[in-house]
Length: 613
Image (cartoon, rainbow, N blue to C red; front, side, top):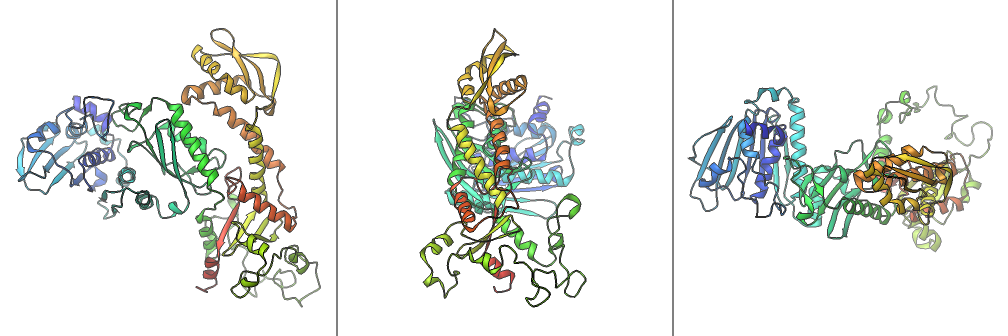
C-alpha cells in the first residue's frame, strides 16, 4: 500500500516510467540506451542499457523501498539523476516488473521479478553486460489509474518527449526508441563538445534550429549559464520547445520559464514563444532538487540571481547577435512562389489573410487587361504617368553603381561595393509605398519600412527611458494601499529601485504603503492594482519587472505612432539611412509586436525558382 501511494506521485503515466528507467541507465554509465514500448507503454516498456549493471547480491535491495547506491553522506550534495530509491519499488507495485542484469566482472546474469508488489526470488539468466528492465501491464494492480490514461498515440508522444528531453543533456549517449506503430526514433551519439551538443540539439529540434540560434555563455557569482536561444523571428506557438537543465537534470521550472518570457518580452508576439536550450551549472548545495518525488521541480537558494542571469545573458546575446532574419521566412517565400501556392500557409480572406497567388489569371482570361496591367507592352494604350519606384527617372536615384554581376564587379565604385557588402545592402526601390527592396552581393532583401522604423524608435525610447531616472508626477493626495505586512515589507525593501522607475512609495503603518509619486508616462493609472501586482511579483521572483514592462509597453505604443507610416514615399538616402540604422540596432529583425521587419532571399534560391540551378 505504501509503495502504491508513492507510485501515485512518481509514476504518473508510461512516460514517467521511461524517465525513471532511462535516468537509472545513465547513472550506471551507459553510453547506449534502447527503449521499446507497446500499447503506448501500458502493455510493455523495455529499457536496455550497457551500463555497469547490478551485482546479483544487490538485486533484492534494488527493488526495496528507499534503497539506493547513489547518495553520499550529504543529502544536499546530489550529483546523480536518481537518489530517492522509490522508482523501482513503485513501478513493481502497480505493474509486472522484471530486472535482468550483469556486471562487467560477472560470469553470468541474474534476474528478479515483482508482480503487483510481490517480489520473486533471484534466479540465473542469460544477458550481456548491462541491465534490461521490462515493465508489463502498467497499472494492472491499480485499475482506477487506467481511466486517467490518454490514447496510445498521446502516451507514445509523451514518452518521445521525455526521451528527447533527456537526450539533449547527454549527447555522448546513443538513444533508440521503438514503438508498436513501427516508428523508431534514433538519436546517434555525438560528443560533449559545443559542436556535439548543438548537433544533438539539431537531432531533437530539427536542422533549422542551429541556423536560427544564438549561443549563450554567461557566468555570475558561481552560476554558469550556457546553451542556445532562437532569434526573435524564429518562434513556436507553444513553449514545448523550451528545454532547461540544472546540473544536467531536465527540469520544468516556472522561474526559468518566467525569465525566458521576460528576456523576450518586447521582441515576440504575445502568442508566440522562443525556442531555447539552456544549461545551468551551479553548486549542488545551492539548489534543492528534492522538492517533489518526480524531481522535475527545483528550488534555488538565490532565485533573483538565477533569474537575473538568464534575462541579462539572453538580452545581451540578442543585442550582440546583430540583425538576423529567420531562414524559415525565405523558405516560406520560396514555397509561396511555387506552383499550387495559392493555398500555401493561409486559408484565405475569411480570416483576414490573402491567399498567395489568389490574384493570378491565366493568359487570355478575363482577369488580364493589357491596358491596365503593370506588365503591359510599352506600345499598348495611352501613355500613363510613371509609377513611383520603377520609372526611369525615379529609379535612377537608387543607382549606387553597376550591379554585382561577374563582368561588372571589377569596375564597381567603392561606395557601391561598401553598400552591397552590408547585411541589408543597398536600397533599389520602394514598392507599394511600404516595402523597400534592397540588394546585397548575394541576395535580395525586402524590408517593411513601418515595422523596421517602429523598432528603431522603440529602442531609442527605451534607451532614453532607462538611461536616467524616469520622470514622475507627485500625487495631490498620497494613495494609501492596504497590504499584508510581508508584502509591505517587500515593497519597502525595493523602494529605491521603484523610485528609479518613477514610483515613490514608503511604509504607512504595519500593513500599508503610501504612494506619493507615479511615473508621469503612465498618466492616470490604477495605483492600487499596480502596487498589488508589484507585491505579487516581488513575492514570486524578487523583481520589479511589472513596472518596467508597463513603461516599455507605453514606449512601444509611442514608437508605433511616431514611426514612418505605411504609404509614405521615401528618398533613396532615407531608405539607405533606415537600413544602416537597422544594422546598428539590436533586435531590429522584428518589430515591437514580434513580426519580422525584413525577409532575405538568397540569389541561389531566386535562380532555383527560374530553373537556373
